[in-house]
Length: 260
Image (cartoon, rainbow, N blue to C red; front, side, top):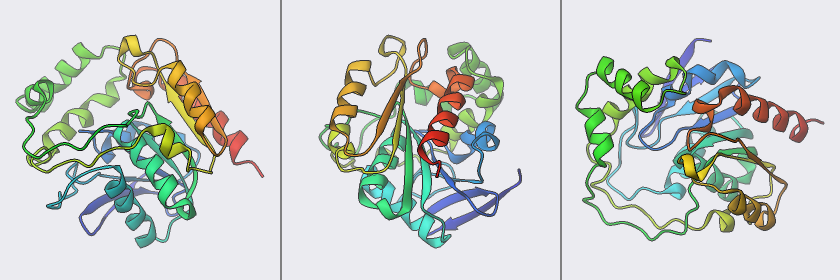
């Protein structure tokens, strides 16, 4: 499916199809192009955006955080006159998706959250160093980065690796030079979300963030219908480590939640 690229203020986006019904929000240090292997699997035209400071998007001279990034996403949806949509997010993008569902319910039909952070963190000052793993990837060319990514993540499909590496090089040099906003607990955000939510998570002992206990807490605190699905044997990158099971869970949720 050929992509149409554009820009809304500082945010770059790619539209796959003329009438997007799905909005894709990537995780930290990834980009919109990291969704390329999956864009044909959602049963709808899709729109993917680069978060501020990621991919082709610029980084304004202000703090970063889920509310600011959800405002960016809302601006793109309004600019393209698209919505309400199903918002699919991974990690940082899942936090952005939840914030969008809380702040702009008029733009959101349902949420699919892949292992989001639990939140509840204080804001962070500017001037933080790049994580060592990220600095190491940025020193490698694309071919060497792909080899490193495959060695570190042997369960990932090969088609995930090139854009994963490229996105690390695209990440703004200033991403840690700006402060980050405090993040509310995920349970507090979901308590203000009324649309259907799918929460996908793996195993904390394999690098996942959300445990089955915390997922159950999210179900209890959520205002709207929330379905938590545990994908066993995977960590933080659920769709990359278990693509078939991820897509099956997404398809079942969309069929059951959005049917007339």
